[in-house]
Amino acid sequence: MLNTLNNRTDHDQSLADRVALVIGGASGIGLASGLAMAQRGACVLLADKEGSAAEAAASQTDPLPGKVEAFQTDASSTDDLRELFSYVDRKFGKLNILFCNVGATGPNEFDLTEEAFDAVIDLNLKSHYFATNLAAPIMRRCAGEASVIYMSSAAALRAGSPSPLYSISKSGVLMMMRCFARELGPDGIRVNAVCPGHIVTRFSRNWLNLPDADYRKAIEDRARRIPLGRVGQVQDVANVVTFLASDQSGFITGQAIAIDGGASA
Image (cartoon, rainbow, N blue to C red; front, side):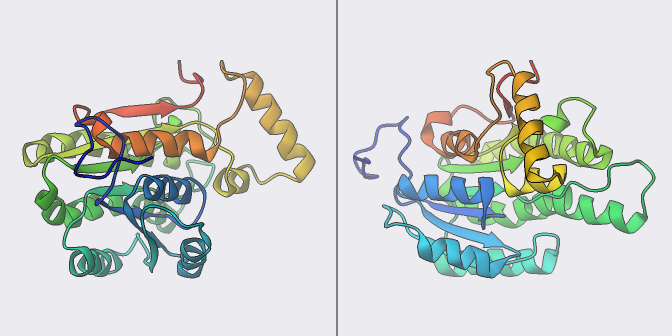
C-alpha cells in the first residue's frame, strides 16, 4: 500500500500530493513514466503534440492513486510552452516533477539543411531549456521536493549513432542538465537525465524503419551485443524516472544515468 504524504519516510518512493508534468507523455517512455508516477500517488499532466493521443491515454487508464490528465502542446514552440506552464500554475499552483521526454532523431548524415538542423535542436535541446526556465518559478514553491528529469540517450555517451545530429543534441542535453543542476540546486530543485539504450518503442521502431521480420532480427542482434542479453522495455526507463522523481534520489543531482543493459560499459 502506498504511504500517504503525512506518514511517508524521508526516503520512500511515494509521490502522493505531488504534481508531475510529462512533456511528450502520449506514448512510450513518457506515458509509462507518467502512469508509474500516478501509481505512486502523483497528479500527472501528460502534455504532447498529439493531444488526442494523450487524452485517450489519460481517459483509458485504470483507476490509479493519482489523477492523470492531458494537455496539447508543441514543445518546439516557446509560445506553446508558455501556455502550458501558465496552465500548470493556474490549475495546480505548484510543480514538483518535470520530465522533458520529447525528441526527434533527425537525418542520418552530416550533410543536412538548416531547416532540418533547427527542427531537431528546437525539439531535443531548446525545448528542455525553455521548459526548465518556465518551470523553475513554479518549482521553487516545492523546494526540497522538486525534480527535473531530461530525456537524453546512450547516443550522447559515445559517437556512433546513425544520426550525428541526434547524438549532438542529446549530448547538449547532458551539459545543460549539469548547468541547471548547479543553478537550481540552491533553490532545492534537482536536475538529472536518463540515457536509454535501445528501448522497444514506436520511436525506436520508426528509427530502424524495417519490416516486421527484419525488425525482430535486428532486435535479436542488438540483444546479443548487450551484456544483460536483452533490449530494454519502457518500464525499465519508467522505473528510473520514478526513482529520480522521488525522495529516494534526494541527494542525486547533475547526473546522467545510462539505462542500456550495460551496452555503454
